[in-house]
Image (cartoon, rainbow, N blue to C red; front, side):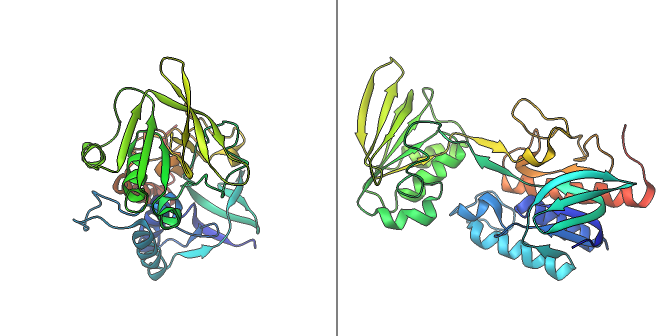
Length: 309
């Protein structure tokens, strides 16, 4: 494919979908590079709290299809491919994808982030065999089992609460003395009798031959012990998906794209939004707002050509 668009949105999480909806409603011909399944990391979240319009929360697998349908109804086009490269092309951009090259004057990078691996023996070998990043997907398979969640932030707490609906016990292994993240999740976790907290703990190895049978845990005092579990869910943070840039944009120390308050990067006509952007608040509502802001910034740029230097 070699079509030209006003705006290309790389990524179809809530930031990308919001950018696509806004751009299309502003009358810009918009293409979304959605990958195989639009929705991003939110698809795996059982309940998103704090999103406007949903006082009781909303599953990510409901919210994202709604947002995609809105964007499509507004005129945004979708392609089940991903961005693989970005190069300047006159006063616009050539966007390389798995299906060919597209061109546009404006680009929104909303490629999201991937969960960081623990980087311990057994993790890669046992992926899909007890090592998982989706409690919603695998929780029903773990009824009456003991499972481990590694991490103490929002994602880890949300997954632990989901798993507690199925497992007999959820052991949370986390660094530091206390859980991080939102107080509402901390209260829910500490008040759940099926969740056991083990602070100042790290996983040194995931055990098992064909499937996960346990973890070797290192405590803050340097001691180690084995814990029998049937599954391990690592949620120790996110790594922004920026490999396709190949050094073409300034990143912060965490590998996220630097922007101004309007989501504009130093590259004229290129914005970033959502988990791939430095300083993002890490909330679904915030990501949606960033996507809309990026689309508005590009609409103004396409109108007057102004861009900060």
